Image 1 (cartoon, rainbow, N blue to C red):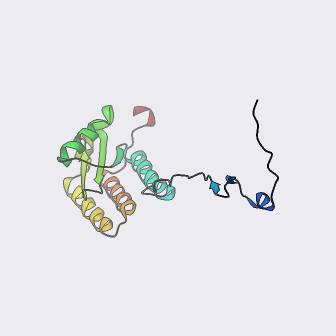
Image 2 (spheres, one colour):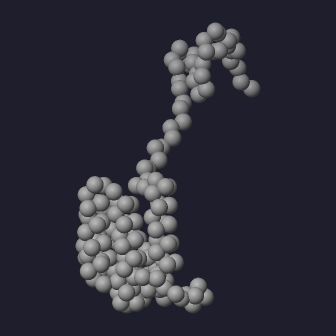
Length: 165
């Protein structure tokens, strides 16, 4: 059994908000839910949709597999980009990877054997220069979309049937 006093309600009790209480000493105790701030994504949904559409159109029209990687590329950026390109598996020969490390301010364009046959090194250099110009203006998505389109235009159209993929 417990003993104690029943405290009468004061006018102040009606004015308290959720999570607030007045202690018997007169001190206010307040509990608030703190929501952690969500990390800001580097690109909007619209920007990602533009990039995805550019890659889908390029892949569909050329028969090549276009991919973009954004993230750290480590010390040997070329080696890391080539390893990422190899992850395309059976599609690596037809693969075109644009790997960008914004933090390092570096990027690599890797083409598989078939893609390299259809996209000359000179076109990769022009696409790289286009990306650099856009990246300097903090327009990463614009630079990537432009590069994908340039590389796709150079590769030309593939007349393979969808079942041949």
